[in-house]
Structure formats: structure tokens, C-alpha cells
Image 1 (cartoon, rainbow, N blue to C red):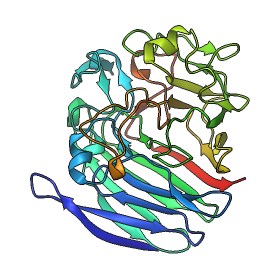
Image 2 (cartoon, helix red, strand yellow):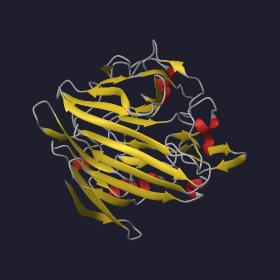
Image 3 (cartoon, rainbow, N blue to C red):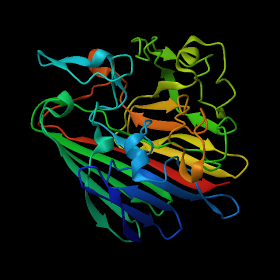
Amino acid sequence: MITKEFYGSLADGREVYRYTLTNKNGLKIKVLNYGGVVTELWTPDRRGGYTDIIGGYDTLESYVGADGYQGALIGRVGNRIDQAKFTLEGKDYELYHTEDNGNLLHGGNIGFNQKIFEVTELDGDEPALVLHTISEDGDEGFPGNLDLTVTYTLTKENGWKINYHATTDKTTIVNLTHHAYFNLRGYAAGHIYPIKLQLDADTYLPINENLIPTGELRSVEGTPFDFRVAKEIGKDINADDKDLIIAGGYDHCLNFKGGATETPVKRGEAYDELTGRTMEIYTNSPCVQFYSGNFIKNAAYPFKGGYVQTPQILFCLETQFMPDSINKPHFTNCVLKPDEVYDYTTEYRFSAK
């Protein structure tokens, strides 16, 4: 089932609507046409009770004014580009410099998290919302007209599936992801430390002082970044490790064993012992940025219900390419050419043990 309601208007008068998708099992998600933002995600615990497990705000004004990219689509290039510069086919490009140490962060000044998307509703046993936009040639400094369709689907298996499909008329770079913030005990349940996480990642990317990957692909063996066997997020988060100290916790790209796959496969799982709530991650993307919410602290914008922002109360698992790939030839390839299709899918699948 899909329902639609007016959510508010932007300063320029454009209207924002919220869509509620519910599958036959009771899984429910609420989505804005503004930024593809997911404002609520209700999933079951072992007793059959449903809780909203995704971070966000009560009003459109907060989504517009606050930082943190809560629940939003991210593009044209997610994560960071060193000093907001790159060279493509012999031409130098200089992008919007954010306050993030002079880097490009999550698409620039007006990224996909601030776009109004055209919406098509596909109701049925697996309700879906199709979000479409065209990022014009030169948008935020990127070349090419990028035709983007992102589809959110609630599956029969209690999954929230995200498919990214994009084409371009000029060689460009693309790295799309989603910035959902989770806490499996409920978004207002406190620190994420007891949540157990397992990821099929055998290397990670060390970072410099500006949170840019150094270029090294380092084995997770013997490091706090080894999640090949499930462990509590809080177990090593305060370890005496240079990478953790720089970021104030986890904010690093972990690389899945074997890289990208043709079709989505299970790459990890988060589990909360208290509620039994489980979130499996299926994707065909090569990497995931694991972010432990180290910079959640904007006191001016409390979360839903007045819940005060506090570091490490929510976490992100952002499937993607390696950050700054365009400036590191040995990293994953983020270049998209006119005869190619960008087609990646990530599914967060929910159950209870």
C-alpha cells in the first residue's frame, strides 16, 4: 500500500510530499520527494512489535537546515574527493569546496540530498517508489547530463531495496549511495555500541588527517576494522588506532572480498540481542563506508520527538565505490561513459531472532 501526504514547501515555493509504503508483513517506510529522504522505517522485533529504527527530523525545515544528510540519497559523487579536484579525459575539473577540509563531500553545495525528484508510485505486493531526476551538464561542476532513476521497493522478504540506475551523454564520474542512519533498538534508544556487526570485508582504506584515503588497501587482520566475525560495534571503537583517532570512531571504507558482483549477494549483518532485530545487507557494490555517527552533535536540530543529537547513537552502512577513486587509479572505477549503464542495488533485509 502507498499513501501520499503534503509535507511542506521550500523557500522557493516548491511542494514537498511524503509517501508511506507498507508491505503485507507490516514493514513500513516513509519517503520524501525532497532528497529521497527516508524519514521513518518501522521494522519488527522478536515479539512482533514495530519500532522506527532510522534517524531523522520532524519537519521539512530541519531537513533543509541541518547537516548530516539524514536519510538522504547522495550524489552525484558520494563520500569525499580530495581538494574537490580531478582530471578526466585530459580536462581538469574543480568542484565546490565544502567546509570538509577543502574536499568535496557528498556531491557538493547542492547535492542529490536537496533535489526535488519526480515520483512514480508502483503499488502492489511489493510497493515501490520510483524517483527520477536529471542532473544537468555542469551541475556542481560535474560533466554530462546524468539521467538518474532510484527505486525504493519493500520486498516480500521484508527488505528495503534501493536500485540506482543512471546514464550519461558525456563521460563523467558517479558514486551513488544512501545516508540512512540506523539504530536497531530504535532511533532514540541510545548508543550503538551493543549492536553486533558482521561484514564480508577483508581490507579497509586507511585515511589521512583530512579523512581522505591514503591510497593503501590494508588487511583488516589484527585491526579494529575486522568485522569478518560478528562483534559489538563498541568493542574496538575506542582502540588506540591512528585511523580511529583521526575520525573519532569508524568513518572508513571497508572493501568486500572479491569486489563488486554481478548481482546482489549477502555482504553483512547487524544484530541487536536485546530486541532480536536483524538487518542483513545484500549488494553488488564493491565497498561499504561504515560510519559510527561520530559527528552527530547539532544541538540546534534535535531528532524526531525532540531527541537530542549525541555522537554514536546511530550508524551508517553506505554501499558505494572507494572514496576519491577518480584520483587513485588503483581504486574502484567510478567513471561512467555514454555507452555504459550505472546499475547497482542494495537491500537492507529485516527479521527478528
